[in-house]
Amino acid sequence: MAFVVRWNRGLRQWKTTTLAYFARVSVSTVERIERGERVSDDALDRIAQAFGYEAGYFTTPRLPLGAEQAAASLVDTYSHLEIVPVGPMTTHRAVRDAARCDAVLIHRPEGSDVYDDDIAGLQEWLDLASFILSDPPPSERGRRDLYNDILACVADLERRGLTVLSGVMPAPQDRLPDWKVAVVSITPRLTDPGAAKRRHLMVDRRVVTLPSGPKTT
Image (cartoon, rainbow, N blue to C red; front, side):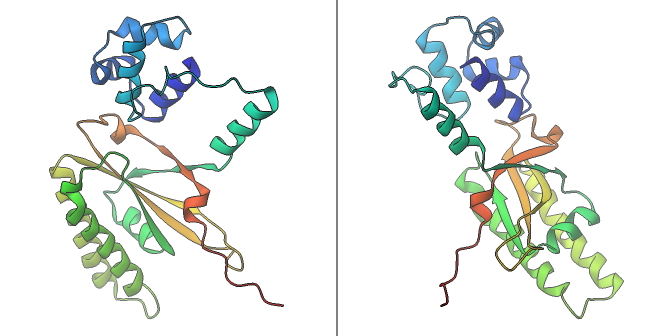
């Protein structure tokens, strides 16, 4: 449990004080959990809910797993994850790199549906840019105008309290070895204050795998 709490906190780049604030527990409680010391079930439920899990995630009794089952469970949970470098989507280069990808993956683990239209608008801009940048490419001025329009869309999301990060994930497919996916992370600053400093995301490779076509004989 200590590892899982530290890993989740590190993944979000939260300080112990940040986790304590969102979980409504003391900093010493967080520190005790991460040292593997015993705390109340109520505190564990609060920690779980701060991470977005249901109450009972850390406290519900589970059947003990054998060594082989435990290893298989870890492999199933973590072996498909890939580290994707990301950064603020605030430059022409960031927009260009995203638009030149073959697909876009919007990562919004904590986004409210109140932002649905704005996020859909950003995805439409990126899809449009991908189409426009294909052969024949626009003029340099046309590219700048396009990038500025997309950055204005990102700025609107930022003004509404969201953090927008982007990166490129190599995702080779069957017969498409150069396939790349633009990963765009959108999270509320209120519930994920460390996002702006995040430099990596963990993405499940299965999410970006294209469906297999029919087999030929």
